[in-house]
Image (cartoon, rainbow, N blue to C red; front, side):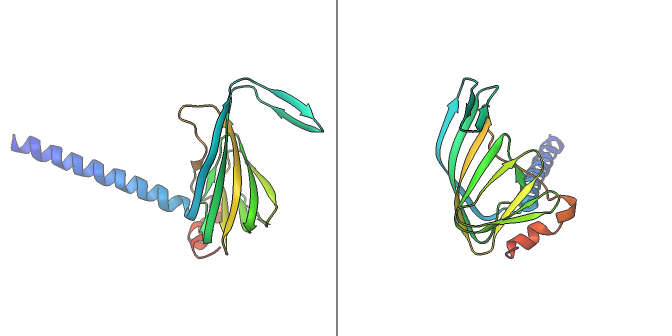
Length: 168
């Protein structure tokens, strides 16, 4: 009996360490730091739509969820490497940020700029002096809804997560 109880305790301790290590690796691997998103409104569109007006097209084939959120980066803040299902329309309100893609190309956006995040490749947003903005997520309807997927840094940016904490 004692051997059986000891073994259960050892297994429980091993599982606890593995779970803690996994969460730590995910948190450190994505490099998110001084970055906050706050959902403002979320709604669903249950019927497919096809719009074509004023040279703008929007088409859905399945139900979608739309979420508007505010985003704030502290000085030196980083979103961590991530991607989104569907797409995100990002609007910079104040400050500036640098958006880096999986091929390690970078573009800097200032107040009033808009950019689109889409696809399965990871991307990283960093801000040296702080930034605020708004995100409009358009994602496939799911339960639970998925708005962001954290990723490891791509090979060309192996040191980027550590650098971004210091104000990339």
